[in-house]
Length: 348
Figure 1 (cartoon, rainbow, N blue to C red):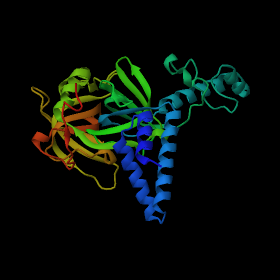
Figure 2: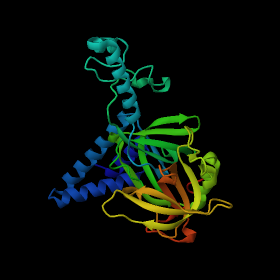
Figure 3: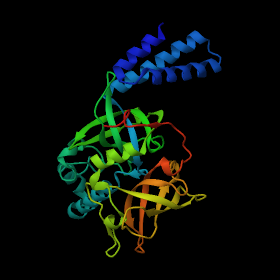
Figure 4: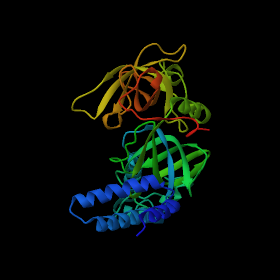
């Protein structure tokens, strides 16, 4: 058994580089040997496990991508509003058709025979017609990651694109902002945005132990995300208590500094006070909340790009969900000490 050649063959088919496969192989062998398995048997099992794992991924039509994240949302129930609307429709059928409501709902493709709500032409757009006829579940949790990615195939790499990833693996899809990862996903380019789906079966993120230089991020953001860049004053209307969020802009990016970082005990979130460093911008701090499990790059007095989803509280105060913070290391290093990738490696 020539392990090196076997791993090269897997790399050629999947796009995963040989060093990554070798590290995975060696880790598996070490684990089996530590449990008392003989070295030759441990190597054989490890290789078969790796081959089987990647073959399963290839069958799913998933492709290999690499890139980095600038922000990742908290886990959310993506079906919340679809389910609420569907149940309101069912209530309407109950009122109109009485005991025979299910028969009429089935006829109109509103529910199945069990009275469960269905996706249909009325409640789901043509672009999502693959859902038509499927049951709308009460809960379907996901995270959405935003960043810059490119497909890797046969050792070659596509140009970098701004993209987003929907991941159902909410407990393991926890990338650190600015770190380079390689992963499997399904999806395609939609109007210039690489839109990917990261299923539970392909949920692994391979950390490349590299991070991207701040200047590279700024260059890519200005090129691909110009509508999302702005001052607090442009994004928050302090008089009307409205924000600039719309269907095309789910998040915004502002150059800011961490004025205070409050770590909480017994809660899933921390609080961060941010002051804009943009010229002629809002002078006061804006307090944002960040999910504790995702908070890996915020530190006191950090300066960098804050990535956030803005809104107003009921009391009229401006706030946001902080989904990413990309620090500029020239103004201080955070807890992560990883070599930086320059524009020559991951840039234009």
